[in-house]
Amino acid sequence: MSHGHLPLGQGAGRAAVLTGLGSFVPPRVVTNEELSRTLDTTDEWIRTRTGITRRHWADPGTATGDLAVAAGERALKSAGSADVDLVVLATTTPDHPCPATAPDVASRLGLGNVAAYDIAAVCSGFVYALASAAGAIATGTAERVLVIGAETYSTILDPDDRTTSVIFGDGAGAVVLRAGDPTEQGALLGYDLGSDGSLKDLIIVPGGGSRQRTTQADEPGARPADTYFTMQGKQVFRHAVTRMAASSRAMLDRSGWAPETVDWFVGHQANVRILHAVADQLGMARDRTVVNLDRVGNTSAASIPLALADAVSGGLITPGDRVLMSAFGGGVTWGSTALVWPDIAVQ
Ligand code: COA
Image (cartoon, rainbow, N blue to C red; front, side):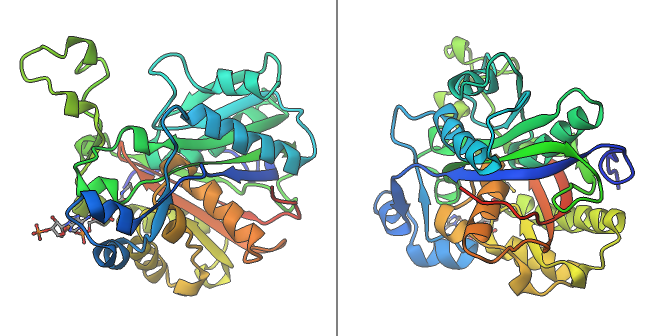
């Protein structure tokens, strides 16, 4: 088993400390009933196979950057300061194939000429972005970082594909990280990251990149539908459980936490059956699992910060709680991190 181990966080001189949290979902709610009017599916199937009852989809004209700005604004307000020197944006659905979305978001937030870049690790994007931001803090490249996970999957879903359209939702979540001490409440305690590119076809948008160009739609074999998101759900399910459990275990080892001492498991919100299977494998009680996918679906890179914001504003996660985060996504990629929850006001 391959796990990337970044020598960051615990043990390093400077840790990244979470100091702000905010989230945003577009107003339009799409219920299972609404989807079952145009797709061969039922509310019952979606609820029992995934746990999802509704999701939010952006109206045409709303882009990922718009959601990122809204969540970013709230995270900066929660942190009590708009003073950041780096913006890292995790997304699968950037505003354009080129340039990255982060610089525009930074500019619209009035952050000046700060460094800004996107991270593409699909549903693991937010954890990868946290590790990347923490690296910038550890090396002194940045003092305060705005880390955003934002997605508009509704723009890449095939409206005729019942296996993907019922699962994904749009939204954005953001945190502010500041340089601090590894022993502080809110310090990220390290990272476990990994990938297996031999499984890239499990989650893929085949067209629109350099391998299969959309500009040459008349090429033999090219289909407009190739710009849609595709997923081999059953296989993804299996790998998600195995990898999230192994990565969580590696993270628990690093932080020296026994599974039963974790207050909240904030796993990537793909399917409630995945979250419960991971909890079972780790020997954690299922009711320690944060679940908000019932209301927002799978929001990919936005999923973990949206779940965090929901759990903190709902009074589940409270200061001093041990929080373990773990994600799995296209690539395939996976990643985990952990922290003791700080005393912050969520927006
Ligand atoms: N409504 C009704 N039936 C559906 C359906 C839908 N929306 N989607 C699939 N089905 C059907 C299938 O066609 C299949 O029919 P068949 O038996 O006649 O072939 C049947 O339901 C079972 O499909 P299967 O894919 O085996 O179901 P599943 O229990 O694995 O659930 C997922 C499908 C997609 C919900 C599940 O595999 C999953 O959650 N995977 C991970 C998804 C994810 O979020 N990944 C994101 C990155 S981590």
